[in-house]
Length: 159
Image (cartoon, rainbow, N blue to C red; front, side, top):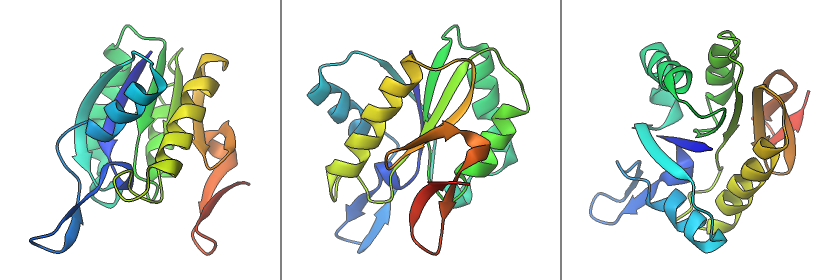
């Protein structure tokens, strides 16, 4: 199993000097969760952006990284605002791999509960799923085309 970190709210930290949240170029949030779960999974950071900044060049890099990986089970930590665009992009490749996208609506460093729950669910779900592209968020687990962020309610749901 491999975890690919693209950034997003999951990883954001507060900069007290500038008074704003930023996406750091590290994997500390994910590594902290894995340490607390006593799970050893390889984590690789590849983009480190808010998902609103992710473009098709970034998605191509993500797709290339997934395609070239020897791992058959990959979790992608991704921002929630454009997760559906990235899952559709990866699904078009029809890879014989299990790719599970997860993220968080609240940064791990502000409140670690949601990020920890989502990543934990993604790990468990990924180990029991067939090849395909999935989204695991807020207790909702399913194929990418059946799970969406409801922006009016601020939560993920089945469609």
